[in-house]
Image 1: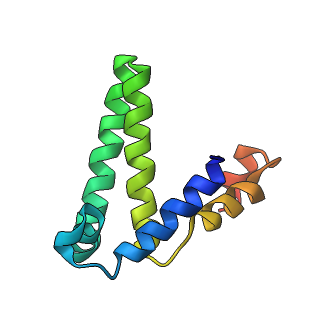
Image 2: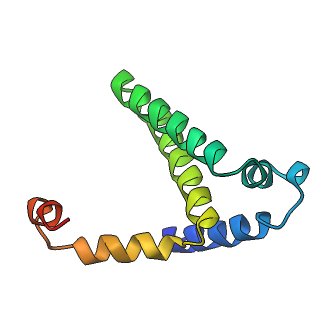
Length: 105
């Protein structure tokens, strides 16, 4: 499965979970707990990603980045955004110096 297809399929599932009962899935329970719970999970996963990188454990790093991306997608869906919104921003930056892009903000 191509990566963009995986992102699209996951985004569709996350969108469906928004209207599900809290006890029906992990994601539905996060949505019902609200933004603070989602943000807390992103913070936890970011910390675990940093720790895996510092430990030099590439398999664990992949696992933790997958968790970080997943919870970031939960946040996107919570905010009514799609992975394509992020991909479009990355495409906009493509070919632009990182220094120039940062200075333009």
